[in-house]
Structure formats: C-alpha cells, structure tokens
Length: 502
Image 1 (cartoon, rainbow, N blue to C red):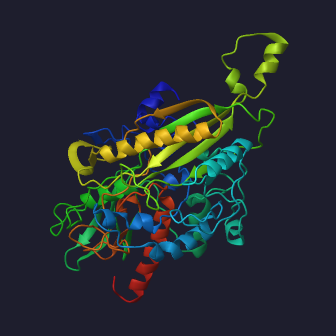
Image 2 (cartoon, rainbow, N blue to C red):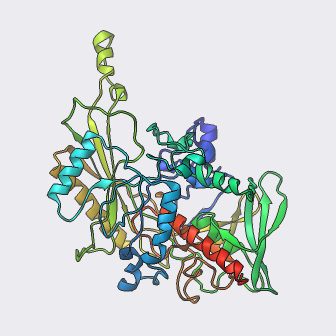
C-alpha cells in the first residue's frame, strides 16, 4: 500500500495481514472512524454491504453446555438464559443453509453438527493428527469445521454457489460463493423473497423510542455520502452491527425514558470480551520432503478445548483450543539465497521445509471492569460521539496463555518436529476480532440487557443477536452461534408479531 493510503488504516493494519491493495476497501478509514483507547484495543472493522461475512476466518463451531453452564457453576458473571438444547435445532438450521465442512468427532465439549465432507488434509497434518491422538489421551486433533462448500446442496447451488476451489484467496471475496457470506448466501436468498431492500451508505445513529407505546418506532440514519439525516420506521428492529456497533447504537439511543441509553441494568458497555490468541509454538518437519500438496485449502486442523474438561483441573478457569496451520515453503524461501546461473535457478524452484504453527484461542472471562463508554472527547466524520475502551486481559488469561505455550511445544516434540519455538505475542484485546459482551443476555432485567430470545428486556420489539449479547466467551469461534441465535430470535419475533405481542 502507498504510505499515504496506509495512514488512513493504521489501526486496521495492526492485524499484520489486512491492508493490501486487494483488500483495503473491506476495512474502515481510521481517520474517519476514530475511537479513544484508555487501554490499547484493536478495533478491526468493515462498514460495507456484507460486513465481516466477507472477511471472517470461517471456522464454525458449536458451543456446548460446558460453555452455557460455566458461569452459574463457577459464580462468574450471570447465568446464560439458554442451554444447548434450546439452540441445537437452530445450529442444524444454519449449518444446512450455510454449508459447513467437517467430521463428526464425538466430542461432548464440541458438539457434532450437519456437515459436508471435511476439507482434505496434507501429509504433515495427517502425521501430526495421528501422533497427537495416539500419544495424548486427553485431547483430539480434528479437521477444522469451516464454512466452505465441499458438496453443495440443491438449495445452495440454486443460490449460485459452487464448491471450494482451494485457491485460499478468501480475503478478496469468493467469486464462486464457496464460503458462506451475505453476498453468496443470505442476500441472494432474501432477494428471492421479493421483500428485500438494501440501503448502503447508511450509518445507524440511534433507535427512536416512542414514549407513548413503550416501543421502538424506528431508527435514525445518517447518509454516509450526503450527511442527510433520515428516519426509517419499523415494527421490529434487529441490531446486528457487530458487538461494539450495536452497543454504540444502544448507548446513543437516549430519550426521557432512557437518558443514559437504552438500558435499565447498568450492564450496557460492560463485560467486554475477546478471545486472547497469538500464543503457541512453531516448528519445522524434516520428513516427507518427497511430498507436496495440490491447491491451498482454506482451513487446516483444530484441537478442541481439553483443559478443565471431564474433571481436569488447572490453575485457571475455562480453556483454549488450537488452530493448526501447516505448509511447505515454496520458491519464496530462496529469496535471500546468493548465486547465479543454472544451479541457482534450479535451487530457486525447489520446495523448502515443511512448517507448522499451533495458535491458541483462549476464553476471556466476563469482567465488569472491561468496558466501553460513549465519549464526546472526539467525533467521527459525521459528528457522532465515539466509543472509549478500557479493557485488558487479566490474571486468568495470562495463566492460560502460559499453559497453552507449554502444551503446544509438548505436542510438537511428541510428534517429531524440529526447531521448535514457543511464542507469546501478547496480542492486545480486540485483535482476535471476536468481540463479545457489552449488552449481554440474561434472565434478570436487573443484570442483563436482553432476554433468552435476544429480546430487549424493556423495549420488546428490539432484538440483538450479534456478539454484544454473549454472556461469556467460549474459546470456540463464535460466528456460528451468532447465526443460530439470529435464526432463533427471528422465528420468535415472527411468532410474537402474529400474536400481536410486538
């Protein structure tokens, strides 16, 4: 990226991979969309049609009752208002529609779903999986479950989708519609109903509250390009602006009834969570140098949580899972090689070493002290207040990271890898881009913002089904759960509309 353009996306570039000429348009201009960091927070965003569904990592895992029951059993935060049985049918619904590649692995902490054939593994992945599964009785390496079509259904092909081509250029958007996104799946499906209207370049500023009815009557929108203020009326409002975007809207929705934002519990903005990651190990593998692989599959292996499961007790609560990445160095590995002529050219066209990285994703507990608030200290391009962040990973997360690094090294050693290096990049909160909390679900309006149907406790025709509503942050990637909660809440809202309750 030219330096002048890069200056517009310095925060977005903290990911280390985001801003290129091919992908910069998927991420916000930081100068137009500022925020305040009392403590460092990496807020990675994309304000375009389809949002993060174009940019997500596509790992798709279910939560289990190990996750839904953890808060109440440990006396942390508040109890989830749902259990696995409540959401399981909606996981089924979403997996059928989206298309998830994976295997049925029989792990209670990571429930099986409705899968298309798993993505193929290379020889090093097979070696590592077999070695760990043989030598460690408390854990299991599995194929990652990813939202990529490997055997499309009639419903999916009717939407114009096709199977994954193993190009691994997903960050640019997939012209085959192979990975699940709004553009490939939900927007085409909605268009087929004849009831879809899309209004891009629309910034939702706040929800309009009707003091007489006690309901929301619509939303206030700023046109991004003209700065025009517009009001849209609606019977039901769903917030899906991402965790922090939805919380901003709720905080900015002030009225006589809600002078401090649309909340009675005092929890709005609190309990901010994000997975902590970039801790584990990397290594070389010196065998199988006569083997390579075809294509670049977009997901590798996964090691589900094995800590604090089935009676295992650690010096920290909850647990972590590992994403496993393997590859063989290509011609780029010779970039620093000195030489000239035929021999030099021959060396430059050879494959290099096999490489592997284990990167842990760990749960962050819901701390009341980890928070965001609305501030007038600065304004965005459209004159709106911005969010101020005051959050950090704490003692429990630090203890978990130490164990994750040690276990990554141990698994690599047991599998015969060489040049093993443990690492802890001490990634800032936010960088995992799995923000959760700040408008949590719960049974009691006194300590939560939304109920078991993701329905606002006080304003019954407002729903929130994104990361803001999470009551805790299980170490699994959360997007599949957002989708299942969205389908469940939408079904509930329709039923309530029919009953004239909304």
